[in-house]
Length: 317
Image (cartoon, rainbow, N blue to C red; front, side, top):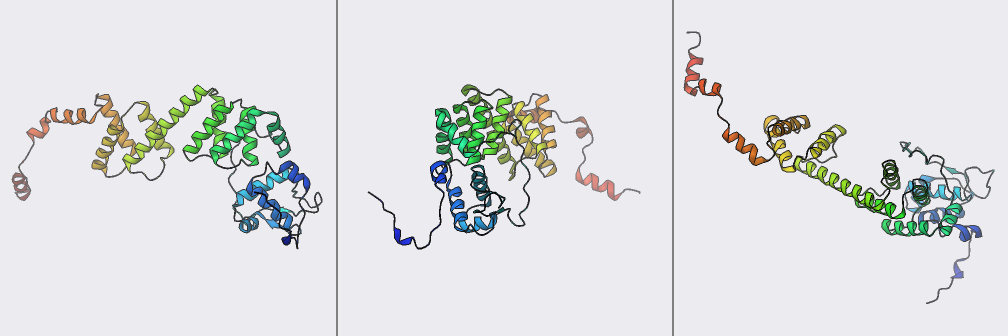
């Protein structure tokens, strides 16, 4: 099937620079193309990111990412004196400032514009493969920031394509497929020398077990939110001591019976007491209670209810 351009809609047109199509069209994602066309169409107006996002039905973050992409490509400028044909890109009006994200050490000064990324992809089959497989994992094209960070992880952290893709797939599987999260974990792996496929598999298995243990604890305790840092310390110590979920849940039940609320220090104290006495299963705990002799004080000082009432009534006589 062949397609032809319908020239009947050419009543009013605007120009698109050839260099954009020649050099950047294959690198730009859908949002970047939308923002570019919108800016070219309304090139005599000033726009905020919020206004463009509303007009194009995309997020403000996508608009800002598009601005960055085209600025690095030297197509957009924030100064009219540098590029008279394009408007100044103003920040979103009354937008709440975002908390600055920490950048892993060594990447603060690392930057690549779209042309440099295109050249890197052209010269490296490994980077090209990394981008293609990562896009398959995400289910969409990579944006400029993602491309730049993946190259940094590969070239400067020294992680192989296989390791990066394994890390990316894991992060996506736990709903943390944000490139900043992937970058943070990659930097941590670099520091701990997790740089082989075998080491990566072992670490992911550990993370999966860690996440599973946390999930089971939260379910046992009826928690609807993630543990606090202090609560997480208790959970980590229970896992390190190989306490079973059944044992922890039983300690939780005893805590509710005693104080009628979730209290991690109280649960921890019960678990430590059981552990010191070799009571590592619910059966051993219940059996220990049955075999424990009654306290002497309870035997010698037990009263009949009627005797107690009689003492109270005759008190003072």
